[in-house]
Length: 188
Picture 1 (cartoon, rainbow, N blue to C red):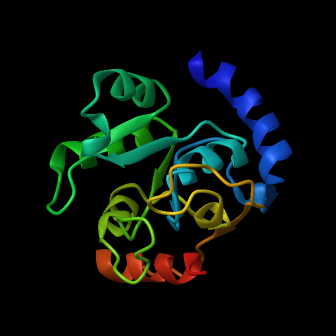
Picture 2: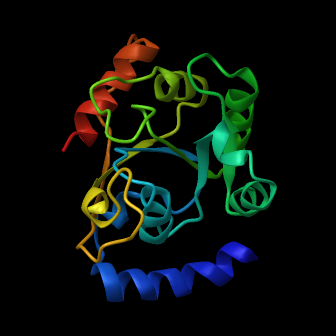
């Protein structure tokens, strides 16, 4: 309910203030679960992806975002699932698999941390091997200018999102190789 109320308002604001441009929406499956792997430049990225996607998205989000009870309640209502960073998180992977198997899209940021695109985690490969759903990529531009790391105020800069499909995966690819192929598609 909260998602359906906030999304139209946020779309209006982002079109007005950030001139958001979205390409490749037709690449997003109209039904069924899939993995949406995106670069990660700013705290705005989850909001931008939620606005750019024609489908409701669910997110793996770092666990320290859930320490404030009010904010935790809010982001859980919007589809966030806590993920412990720095070590394998079995409960988060189970929750992620359940989301995908229940035919919902799951967003994952393969590099793990804003701005660190050179290091990838094998999570997207693990999820793909377990579910065999489509992997859609999102390349986001401009959120690092609109809300840079460490900034206190948002700047009204143009934001672009480009969706695409990952089509070069092979049966014998391991988790890390899959994640690296995905990383290549989201580099900017």
